[in-house]
Amino acid sequence: MEARAEGIRWAGMAAAVPRHTEILDPEVFRRFSSATGILRRRLCPPDLYFSDLALAAAERLLADLDWKKREIGVLVVLTQSPDLAYPATACILQHRLGLSTSCAALDINLGCSGFPYGLFVAGRLLGEKKGSKGVLLIGDAAGKPNPASPQPPLFGDAAAAVAFERQEGSSPLFFSLHTDGSGWDLIMERRPGGKPGFEQSVFSSAVDGQGLVHVNTQHRMLGEDVFNFSARTVPGAVREALVQRGWSADSVDAFVFHQASRLINENIRKSLGLDPVKTPCTLEDFGNTSSATIPLTMVDQLGPLLRERHLRLLLCGFGVGLSWGTLTCDVGPMVCPALVEV
Amino acid sequence: MKQADATSLLACVSQSYEKAPAGLEITTAFRKLGGWDSLAAVLLVARLHAEFGVTVSAGELAECDTVQDLLAMTLKKTGVQA
Image (cartoon, rainbow over all chains, first blue to last red):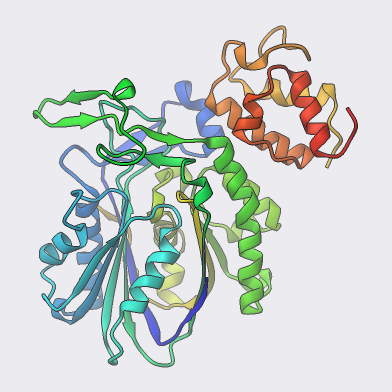
């Protein structure tokens, strides 16, 4: 699906990460770090959640924008780390942020492709009246340790907030969104009571020191086929996006890709013949932060530029679903505070 | 892209382990050697893609018992008679 969004001004963005840093032991993780590019990652302690990171990013951004909470008419929360099965985390964050009850709030369940999807949906929900305002909160706490189900240290925790408003004459945003559900089982996590069934034979649980139950959620990732998927779809999607806009690769200031792993991202970069200077990377410091990788990379690597000047960007998210999407935009200068630590 | 042969395939497989295993030969059941893990499988698939331009799925890799099997599949995918 290709779409052009008119009259939406990207007013600002912020990102928040936990203060706690896990440094990967080079003796133990030499090969893993070489393949993934990850040396460190931020992890939520037991009492910190994605929603808390999202709240912190939103509060900082709205304060810096000097926006009134009651003016925000749209709140979209895109995460695979919701507080609860239901209600939507967006409802809870509407309350915690002190937004008006006239605000439309909803969750979207997507991962690595989430940023272009989230911004597209949020933009579509935006009121027609001049000055209508909306916020997208996006990210995951997928790296948060689970004593019942230790995982390789691929994922880190992060959230980001994007603020946008109706303003005629704003530079249009171009989206191209795709799905291939035949790959649904390449990256997946089961749910008790869900489909396919939650198997007793591989189920495990643990109770921590605070009496909280942790379960093995039977997360699965078929790395070989995820690599193949990214190699097969992403370069073509980027080329199509450039054609869609009539842009040359040279005219783009930065290509911000979902930060999957060094293996995947370097293969994409080389396939497209892109200069590393134009493909900012945050794998080393933050790992794979799921749907937050694109905005986190923008804030962490392009923040000073975004604050000062216009940038021509091509953003591309890809992964779980299988799902992928591109967003091409001319943005900035915008409000973009330094990384928030919680 | 270079042409796959026994030497280059053995190198690809060998370099995917944490430590290059002793005694790896064309007839070795490489996934049964100590040190083979899920990361090795991903690294191997990525190497095959980078060096020979072939896409090998997880399922296809699982069907290859020996390096010889892997070579035959790689050559078939590149349209070369084994």
